[in-house]
Structures are given as structure tokens and as C-alpha cells.
Image 1 (tube, rainbow, N blue to C red):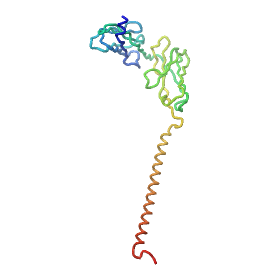
Image 2 (image 1 turned 45 degrees about the horizontal axis):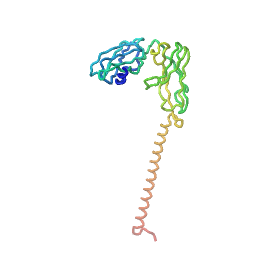
Image 3 (image 1 turned 90 degrees about the vertical axis):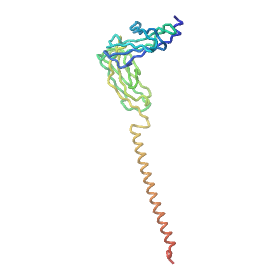
Image 4 (image 1 turned 180 degrees about the vertical axis):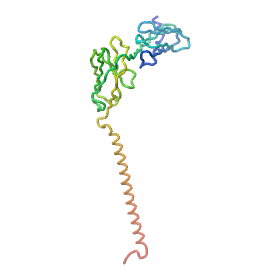
Length: 254
């Protein structure tokens, strides 16, 4: 068996959708097979949840969770029995099915300093839930997973610090929490706050001001060139007139 585990590579498991799943939604689990398999098993925590016999040409096994319930919120892994070479694979890396329960009130959030901060500033984001103890998660738009989390007791506040922020920290932040004892059940996301990080030497609107100054400078330069060109034209025209006058008969006085 030890030799078989070495010869048969591990599968991988994915959830679709992978996030934003609420109670009553449907979820598909896909076990991706590196080799032809005779059968595939899916485990919920340590217990067998699904078993499927496979055709040789199939490289993915799909399993459906219809109308997700609280007890479906759990870690899942898959495993297969190979055909060639024969043997049983190790279990895949676990994936977490986190389910949103709208009966939990979303947490509050605050940002300090507010909104516009200079690069290099330390920014504090606080999230709170006054009802339950558990874990509070900090989310940023564009990230599939929470970026930070903290355990907290009932009525306490979780404080997240972004040290020496850069423009990469700009974005929209929100919080959720998972009650103690129900780690894979989550509250909805709460209200969001917007953070904008600016260069210390470039205050907000400076780029627009610089663009305006450039336009003014170009216009002034064009005007100066036009005046210079007209002046030069009149000088050359006058010089040409005096030369023709001097060269004409009787042009010079005696």
C-alpha cells in the first residue's frame, strides 16, 4: 500500500462557487484526477460523504450539495482508486465550505484615520460584534479570502493595523465573523469603508493641477513664439523696404 501511495499522485478538490455561499444555495464539489480512476470518494471532515464509480476517460468527478444546510459547512477532501497504475491515492488538500447565515447580524466597522491618508501612515480598522464570541475576519475587495482575522469575546472589538501603508493598501474593506463552535458558518459582510493612500508629496488633486499648469505653460509658450515671429516678420519686412528704397534712382538724398 505504501508503494501504491507513492505511485498514485494526489487529486485536487475545488468548490463552485468557492465563496459567497448562503444557506439554501447549491454547491458543486469537483475532484480533479491526475490519472484514470475506478472510483472517487469525498470525505466531509473524516467521514465518507460521496462515492462515485468512474469511466476510464473521465478526469473530473462532480458531486452536488443541494440546498446547503448548516451541517454541510465543513472541510472536504477527495480520494481515488487508480486504474493504471492501481492503488489508492492520498487524500487531497482540504477545502473549506464556509456558508453565510443571514440570521447573524453583520459586524460594524470603523477606519482611523478616515479615507485619505499619506503613504507611510499606520491605519487602524476596527470591527465589532456585540452579540457573540468567535472570530472576526477582515476582507478587502478583490481578495477571495480574508486578509486578517482575530478571535474575540462577546462584546469586544477586533483591531486590525495596516502598517506603513502604500497605494497597494488602497481599497474597500469590510468585516464578517464566525461564531465560536460554528467556525464554517459566517455572518454576512457588514458595512464597508474606503481607504485611499496618496503619495506624501502629491496631495489629492495635484495631478490634475500639474496637468493644468502644463497646459497653461504650453499656451504661454505658443503665444510668446507667435509674438516673436510677428516681430521678426515686421523687422525683416521693414529692412527689405529700406534696402529697395536706397537702391532705387534718387533714393539717396544729396
